Length: 519
Figure 1: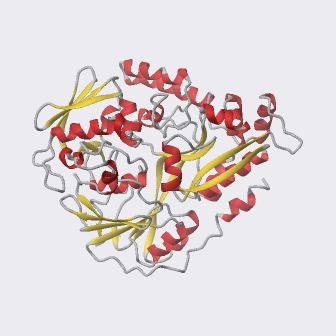
Figure 2: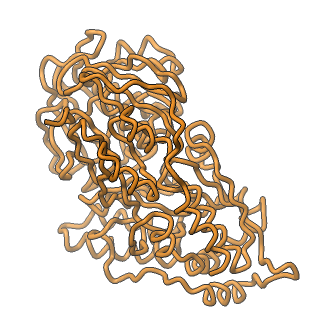
Figure 3: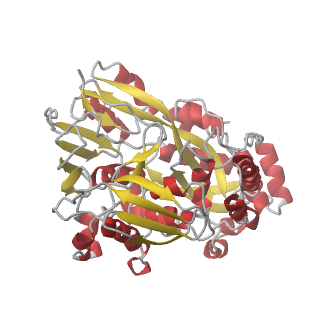
């Protein structure tokens, strides 16, 4: 379509910047990673974004962890038992654990880590309270011996064990002495690395304090522009870069210095409809998207496959919901690109074109530099919506200091562009973004009872087959009353220097414990 062509072609015009800051090549005991966005906090209970979590995953340990193959394996705990009724998990910690300041890490500290994150007085909105605890209906944690800690749940959930593995542990006495402000910028490590330096907006430097970990120092350099990240990689100043732009792939592969490694990621990219009352009352667009018919019409307006091919350099199949294949509802077919159908539905819903050619006006907010070519994708979506008479004002924003606060407070919208991390090990993990109406990750405020009542049936299901029937029915509800404008599962392109050996994971976790100098 005419209005899309200039923007889609623009994705092929960027070149690697020749202007580089004066950085030296990393020494042998150091690995440097170029990332698109800075961390916003190092308080373990407040961390919410993947870039932030990738750094924090080297600073803090967890009871268990999910490895690159999707298996849940021991980390700071050595074993666990699940109660017969599924309402609690008891973990046995490894003996001799300590935090970076020498304080022993015991079951009391593990329980404190969970309870501190849940304390309403702290008002945390990170992944642990906002996603994990709302999904497992966390009721509290308690130490039952020096090395045994129990996590109590309010509802049986088949994926509780995997979700609990995302909670960072830290030492009680150390954190009791700190204000929340101190905890955000001066973490006390329970993992392999300590925070040695944080130059906000520039770099985060970690220093190894114990195994595992190959490199003595890990430097995370904040490089928002994709072309600059690629240029720094080719110049030998960084070893790994994330979110390689599609138009940079040939330059990197032809450099003889680095290669691009591509993986099919699990992150769900979507445009959310913020259905909160104040958005409904605040603008015509906010009011319009309250109607299911309008939200369905907008699905038909966007040519997702063309966006994938021309702006992201990969062939995609549009998502039918929030669950990664092969765990999705296979009976659902992606909404096709059909602008005529979109216009017909909008006419029938009571939103005809006005004298100016528009039906209503709406704002689409989006990050710049957090996801693969995100700002351009958002602009393309805005153009598609314009073409069916929905005047769309696209507002690209800086990620960590501007967009993250909007998202965490559910203040982005009425339309907002977002990527939500997913997995391949369970449909329920992906669905847990909408575990309850009040879940921290329900950024849309969607409250369809046919979806949320399904969680009780899942908890009561006796077999996987029974559970699958409920899951597929819930995914059909999501499809028919969409809180998201469904887009795609993001591919991940990593630039990796020939100096190092590193294999990227599908789940966007950049863990460097096994990375090493290339032989």
